[in-house]
Image (cartoon, rainbow, N blue to C red; front, top):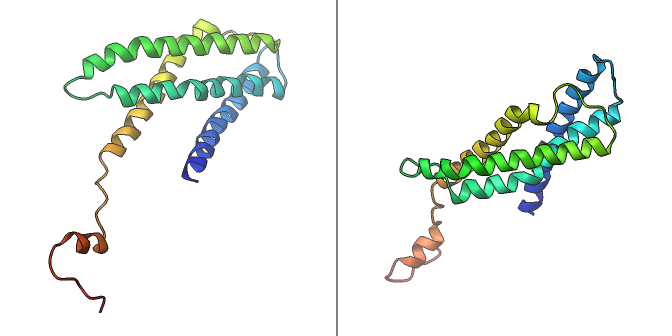
Length: 161
């Protein structure tokens, strides 16, 4: 049941980001010579963030396999840099294909002109993955309850009284 809530929560986060950027896209196009409908803006905003949702497991896996530690941060960085660049380029190419297939006119900043923002977004996903992974690693181990402690102690049996 916990996995279901986790998946639902992640879906809600990606959807909220998509809706926020849908509104921003709608307003950006409103002030141009090519205004678009709310549905077209939703196509742009939601596809952008759902693509990140599809690509983010790679970043999460990378964060688990190659965390940034004091001793090996340079090795992690050497792997993370090209992987995040490839993920970003894949996202941009897929997004341009989706928007092109929808017949939405291009805003003045699209495609490779958004590489810096898309790369920053990818690194934010990697950073969130690292932070959550490190937080999970730093949790104290669960302590044994009284029943477990009593069972492990040799000696006479303890009464329930």
